[in-house]
Image (cartoon, rainbow, N blue to C red; front, side, top):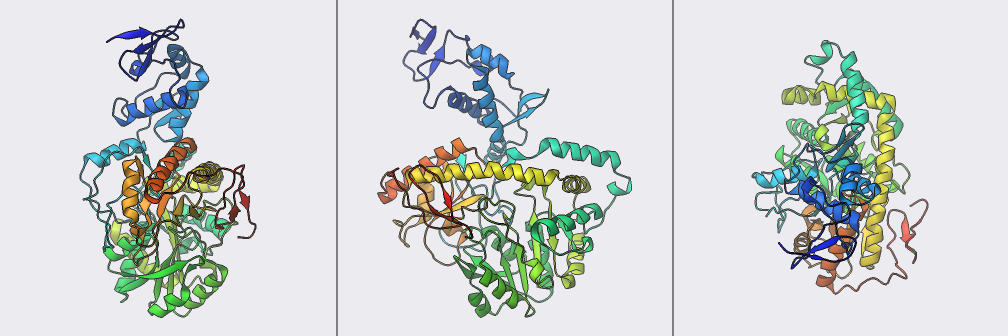
Amino acid sequence: MVFEWTNRLGWWRMAGESVLVAGGGGGGADFLNLTVAPPPPPGGLTVWLVGVLRAAVTDGRLPAGSRLPPTRVLAADLGVSRGLVVEAYRRLTDEGLLTARTRGGTTVARTSTTAAFATAIARPIGRVSTADSRGGGGPERPRSPAPLLPLASWRWRAVDLDLSPGVPDLAAFPRAAWLTAERAVLTGATGADLGYGDSRGHPRLRHELSGWLARTRGVRAAPDAVLVVAGVAQALALLAQTLRHRGHTATAVEDPGSRGARDELTHWGLTPVPVPVDGDGMDVDALTATGLEVAVLTPAHQFPTGVVLAPARRRALLDWATGGRLVIEDDYDAEHRYDLAPVPALQPGAPGHVAHTGSTSKTLAPGMRLGWLVPPPDLYDDLVAARHASDLGSPVLAQLTLAHLLASGAYDRHLRLVRTRQRRRRDAVLTALHQTLPAARVEGVAAGLHLLITLPKLNDTTDDTVLADGIRDAGVLVHPLSWHRVRPGPPGLVLGYAAHPPDRLTTAVHRIAAVVRRGTDEPVVDEESYGCHRDGGWTHWPARGAMIPMPGL
């Protein structure tokens, strides 16, 4: 291996190679044989160090649990400032790859998304049928709608940036607060708490959920009217089984809408019947025309369009329901709002005709499998019986820990912190879109964890799966809108932004834009001005990049 001297400061270049190493400065580190050298790599030394460490985690050189050197030590070894190393560690912690603990050092996260992705690639993949995931994780690309979303033929390969919608910010999980709460729970737990529990859920959690749902969503339900479930997926499963036993064979669903929800309902014997969604939400006249008696909606933040059910539609839907029908209200993304006043739940308007369900999958982590269901009174006993027959009930320690977080206010504090993080990430995506795709129509910006992007130059015959294939080849995974449609409609891309920090999201959008421009002859943006379609409260983006909210929209 040949090195050539490049300057008097002691920097070296590997001759014939594009990778630079250093023979001077800090002398290099034994850790991963890291060295640094000028000229600065593209993006600067922080970006370089983040990339090197991320690659080491991804390819297995740093397995889960591996301890990284203290920032002071690594900085001295590399001859760089400690602040540079601290910032690199922070970015990777934000991505969920590292875990930092006081006096415990920095280690590779045991639940990192990269490790989970590598495991998924290594094993055969079967069908996924869950409303909580809403397609998160990159399923197979079907060329036409099918009853279930198959995964086996998807050609899995590592992507640099997974922007699947429905993937939350796992790095934001409140580990310290959870640990504190769980210790308190274990200290006070009785023998009875650890035995076979109530299939409805632990009384303490149902009590706290009753109060929290009333405070934050306006839901009217006594603790004995709340059923603890393992996420919205199980809520839909229990409702589908109960309704099937009562003679129902079909239910109305939003179109476009959650593919995972449709799959869940289909699995349990209810045929999903698509009802159009427009800028005001589900078309209630079209719903009435189906003659169905059950409808599943995401009224607070519709998936995938991001629209909020308009007031007139809410009234019409509740009128429809009180005629002896049932609305299943999936309170999807209700907690994640940025430029939108809180939208009350539907349940208070017709508690005898609305089954309200939600979960902690997007606020804490989907792996917690914690959710709630507040059904009409006449369905409650049958749902409890179905829950008991299914799995007896949810794990008690997780229930009690969540109850502690709710009672102490720690859960609400966590939501505020996460909301701030997600606003920054959303803004990074919008800024990058402003810089790269000026003609893009972006929907759902005021709330949620994903955006819907459509482009005027994509006509209705464009296959958005082909576009998504090209984007995947560029190292970014997004969902084509057609995955979530039943009936034909305009093409688009559904992009989740929760799982990555702003700098990585900016990189992803630039890659997406490059692929889109190749396919549509879309020009590079003129950064002097940018007109944004009015959606979710935004109407214009001035030259300096500031967003101007429109109150009341």
